[in-house]
Figure (cartoon, protein in one colour):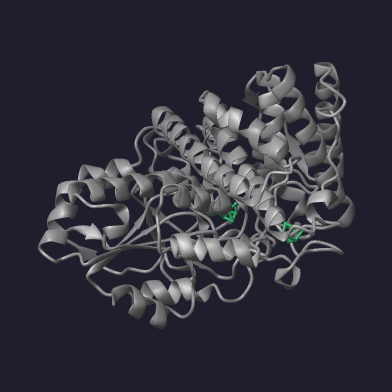
Length: 522
Ligand code: FS2
Ligand code: SF4
């Protein structure tokens, strides 16, 4: 096996014996075979014509191979067989229907082409997750799908480095569109997020914890638990769901359970509740709670119950029955975030922030707000991520911190006070809600009649898996410079590609909060 797509890859180089994520060698090899088949499908469809069927196969297969999504060989093989069937049906030329051996990319002597192809593939995996969520709510964009075909085909090409670099930038723009349609799908279906305080405490009685990123799954579960006496708690990236009017109106959506994904084996241990995984990040479950894990959609783990979709609907009665049987806690349980706080505030999407844009602009003009930081991205298990907590705590009182994705659990229970009636920490949502941050940055640049790079705004990002890759490529494609990136640099970025990232965009690896803050605030 060879896999180096995430931040916890062994030795910062690659997993070759088994994955640090728990992925076994045979699973990794099946995932590569799946990707090789997918390239054949993409090339065949480019020759013969794509369809909704090929679109969905591409999105599902890319999504399934994201870190911590699917560990089940049977699922991966079944999807591979469907893709091979569809490719055969297209009857494209022998060259285009040829399955690609991914080792030709991983073992390529051209380190820079390998790096840029990896960047593109991993970025597309991230975008596939967003396209999947948008499609679940009926939103599809032809440009997004056509990029998948083009990008996958490019993996089998001999394109030179400048061409591959351009393709990565074109991809960044496609992903911007994808995040835009997902934002429209989420806000159009569930309303514009409103600032909402969420408790970390758990009430007595049966409950279900929903994790992942899928709003449509949560909505269906809420409809099915209405009036049953079963409470529902979000976990990880589902926290922002509390701020959507059509989700928060269900009174059984009580609070948020636990912190970010890497703590699940500890936080789920022996808990008398059912856990529903709608997407990543799933870790190999411990015996003490493996009987209460449910997966859905492209998520899978051998031996866990999977909830399938039938005629566009999911029946969560098995999850509900499990929660009932386990019964929940007998008494209310006090729980807190990482720093001891028990209230998390979320719901500061572009709709809310831009509704008070005048206030924000005035605060900058009067000097009440001197700097904006976007401290966001994935969390992870490896050491070095305390940087983000320390960074936030050391930011000056006249600065605002926008945040998003699961990395925020390092500091989202801190009370850093307010500026001009706005909290200093504003949670914009999930990783895909980077779209909100981009909208706010563009609006501020407009208000101040300058470019985004001239704003008193610094992006301090943490990455772990492939959705962070697609968001980063979008930011670069927008010409956003001076991004601080950590906790370590991706193994798949070659030294020459890194040189380009530094020379062209001044991408800066994080150092210490003290030194970085000094540099940023000059
Ligand atoms: Fe966090 Fe995991 Fe959100 Fe990533 S819960 S690392 O999937 O996409 O971020
Ligand atoms: Fe290793 Fe990450 Fe790949 Fe898992 S997803 S095998 S940890 S590089």
